[in-house]
Amino acid sequence: MISFIKKIVLFPVLYGLGCFIACSSNKHYDNNKIELEISYSNKITQIKLSDLNIFDIEYIPLETNEKSMFPGISIEDDVLDDKVLVTDNAIYINSLFGSSILKFNLEGKYLTQIGKKGHGPEEYLFLNDFSIDFKHNRIAILSLVQDKIFLYTTDGEFLKTISCPIDITHIFCNEGAVLCYKRNTGTNTYAFDLLDYDGKIVKSYLNKHQYTPGTMIFVQEDEECLHYYKNDTLYIKERYCDTIFKFADLQFEPYMVLNRGDKRYTTELLVFSSDDEMLKVRNLADKNYITELELIELDKYIYTYIIEDDSFKTFVASKNITNGVSSSSYDLLKNDIDGGPDLFLLTSRDAKTLVSFINPHELKAYILTEHFINSKPVCPDKKEQLVRFANSVNEDDNPIIVLLKVR
Image 1: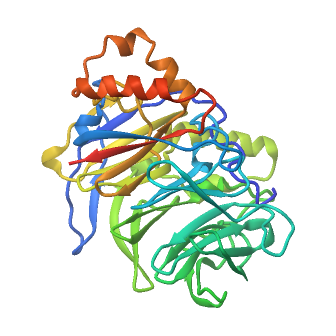
Image 2 (image 1 turned 45 degrees about the vertical axis):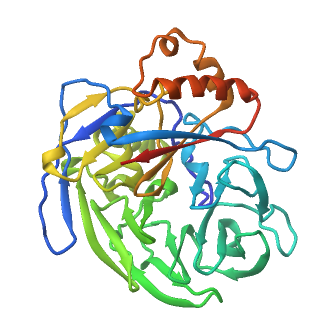
Image 3 (image 1 turned 90 degrees about the horizontal axis):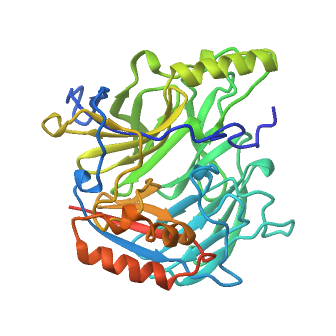
């Protein structure tokens, strides 16, 4: 298989989407490692935004013009390729079909383009991933097929190109360097390389999930290595491990365990020698194992988006057993704040701000539904504001970024 093709079979159909709040038991293994035991319940309930202590919601329409226009974000169309980063002063978006990173301010005004697809000396062939180092005013863009990382300032000025090891699929700016993750082909000695901004390898980290591959190698790359930042600290979870690691002082420190039990995805599920065998093994895996697609940590909760039992679901786990309520739902997070569309979380800006989105044509259609008209949200005045806002945008405008404020 070609290594630079991303998410070859991910999200072919949106089978069903559920939300779960899980009971958790706090088991302290050392000073900072907690095990979350996720349990399931037959009780079907709807998880509301207010259940996560969300009290306010803000809609940011992204300016639409010739320079800033890009395709709408969609859950059905590989949402994890539509990378969105929201900071204290800007919004950065790389859409699946986009050829660059677009930067907007927090009012949605278009500011600039970061990088450009092309064959020039300052241009990349593919934009596979990007990461931002705000302390050093750097944006790193990975072009996997070229085995190169392109460095720009956060204002879009090109700085340099550095070479990176082969098969790098994810990059994470951290402490003045770029941590690079290699797709797991089974036999690679190292899983991570840490590069300085001159391209020198500062340190390499062993691949703890080696295996003997069959004659075919197939890896859904975006699912192999999840990450998030909390208080400017990088946290990483590999697909074949239940532990979330904190990356600090050039070391991986165990931080938290999301215990999948006998549903943990193992490297044995990557071993096959024909197309028919691959399909058989993958079908078995989708039905019997849990694959996480996204992680977000708040002060009180862990949010994760998964594939389990051939369905796409969202899980919300309390980090404190006294707050744990076992319930489930086959729907998105219910927007009971202003009665607007139910939401899927993309990322977090910080521990108090979650990030979602909605496309304008979906919002305009939704406010005309009986469900919305008859809704009785927590904040009725915000419902009226949402109607005025929806009427102010055009159907073919850029997506709307949604910020959810947590107490």
